[in-house]
Image 1 (cartoon, rainbow, N blue to C red):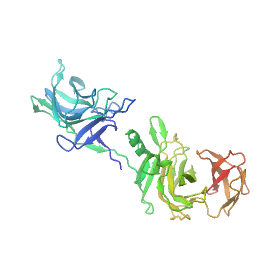
Image 2: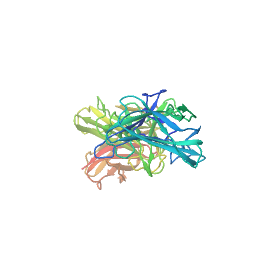
Image 3: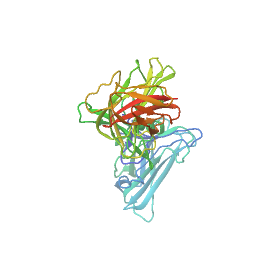
Image 4: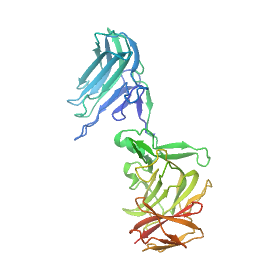
Length: 433
């Protein structure tokens, strides 16, 4: 779990807004920071007690007070030219009653200082209010001049120095965790998004699931998610860095023949899940194998991916990635892929939850490489043959009397999926010359 705490009762972005234990009073303060990035506007932090897109939940903080001023404590260290801002708009029954708009810059030299700002009241109204919109910024403009921060704590309404009234979370003590959940030693689409952009997906693309089947117990859910108006695929891969989806991610010590495990796949429309396992020996790729699944599987289904090595060296490292849909532009928002019991093995071994969805060990095929025709020898009866290339494009191939015709395919490496009448599959890798 990657924790990220958001301020309760307030709206703020994820980036540059955080909870701090460097507080003037209580446990926590609100920390807003500026991030300078050369050639760009950089980033600033802000929070407000109104969410214009969600007014039913965050539309000011309720208060009853006959006040002359508002005070707050702040510790800050801002770059030259950057200015923090504290603003409040006071309302009664939806009517504007008064405001303050206070700005400050420089540094507090490592100490908290108290600011007390007189309220500018509307001369046509009374000093009675029922709600307040607060706006706090680490910089008033959009382009920051340098790295910096400002801490806010303990906002008070005052009347000649005496606190009057109170409102929810005025000391910034209430926070809730909206962090990213991901499997240990794995990276997820959520985590990549958070680390790269400090932005949380509205709906997590991966999470842990508790299953009622005692042989599964907990599993990994990978699902599509919405980004703006587009539906995107979710994915997870083993590793600690963002590039481990396509580079060496973990060590292997043997030439394992199969990747096996269990999955459930619930596509929402014409989505196709993709599994990929790749190995290296030194700097050279040793194998690249994948499995594409488009048929729904509502029960736990056993799969194996045969590993086809290009050379005789024992691999030293590998990468393993799973996608809820093979391409970034997905079709259905509710497409879900569940995974569990993943293993690298010499021979497939099911724990008996469902039928095998994968290669049968009694199958042989030749020639490989081929210039066109491939002969399949097996005691299994297959009815359909589908080839997929390295980018997931699929094509049904002519298949008769155990002969696959790949004559019309361009040169390249193909995963060839054979389906029997029960929709069980066998996957082989063929090099078309």
